[in-house]
Length: 81
Image (cartoon, rainbow, N blue to C red; front, side, top):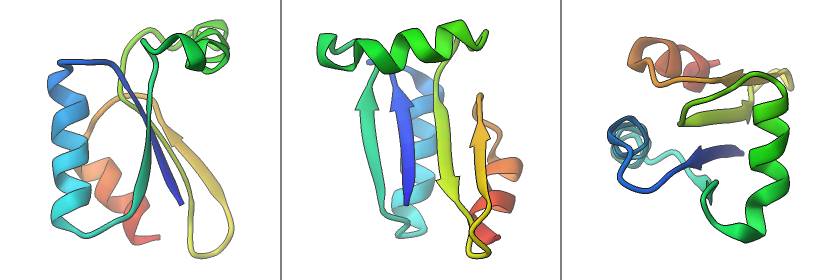
């Protein structure tokens, strides 16, 4: 399962979701500006992450990964694992 942490009107968040939609990759979206997601926002800030999207997932081999910025080539590499 893929989780994408987003903020409203984020160009890169939109591009990442469009790519996954085009590839028919299911994902859960978590809006970091929503007050109910405060814990997730604070966790990533404590890890030094200051921008969105943050994309996390589990590969076919069971390994977990996190991408803390949108990079199409890198995301495609993770989605293919």
